[in-house]
Length: 225
Ligand SMILES: C[S@@+](CC[C@H](N)C(=O)[O-])C[C@H]1O[C@@H](n2cnc3c(N)ncnc32)[C@H](O)[C@@H]1O
Image 1 (cartoon, rainbow, N blue to C red):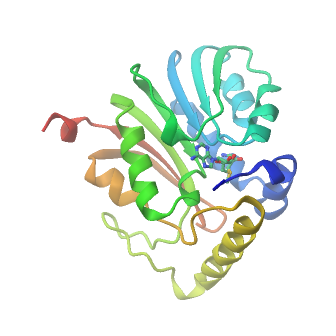
Image 2 (image 1 turned 120 degrees about the vertical axis):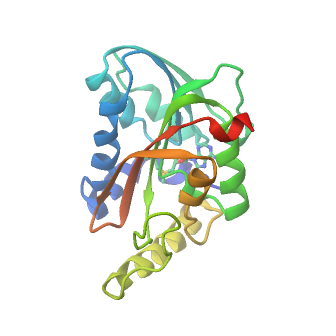
C-alpha cells in the first residue's frame, strides 16, 4: 500500500520534534484561531491526532470533526485523544475514497500533499475543494521551496537555501523506505488554490521558511461558472 505510515506511527511525533522542534506543530496551532465556534471540520492526514487536543483547547465544544486518516495505526493513536465537548467521526480511509454530501466549513491538510505525486495531488485538491462550502476556510501546511514572488511563486530556493532541496531529497528517501510514500518531489499547491480563486487570509513561515502555513478562503466564484 502507498503512503502507509503504520510502521512509523509510534515514532512519528518524536521524529518530527527531533528534526523540526515544534515548527510543524506551531505551523498548525497558529491557524486554529481561524476556527469558527461551531461547524463541520474535515481533518485529512492528522497523524497521531495531537491536533484534536489542540483544537479542543481553542474550541472545547460545538465542532463536528471528521477525521480521515489512511493509516490504521495512526487512527488507533488518534482515537485515544481527549476531544472534550467536540464530536469526532473517525474514518480510516484514504481521502480519495471518502465522500459526503454535507459540505465542510473548514478543511485541514497538514503535511498531506507532500505524500502525493502530481496527478494525485491535483485530483485530491479538486476532491477536497468540492467538499468545502463557499466562504469556507482551508488550513494548508506543508514544506515549501518557493521563493515568494506573489502569484506563481518561483520554484527554486535561493542559493543559500540549497539545504532545503537536500533535506527534502533525504526525507523522501527515508519515507519511501518506511512508508512507501508515492511522491518523490514536492508539488507546489499554490497554483491550484489560485486557479480555484482562493483568497489567502494568512501566510506564515517556519523553520527558516522551509515550512509554510496558509489560511485560505474559498470565494466560490469559480464554481459558479
Ligand atoms: C507526514 S504525516 C503528517 C501527520 C500530521 N499531520 C502531523 O503533522 O503530525 C502524513 C499523514 O497523512 C496520512 N495520509 C497519507 N496519505 C493519505 C491519504 N491518501 N488519505 C488520508 N490520509 C493520508 C498518513 O497516514 C500520515 O498520518
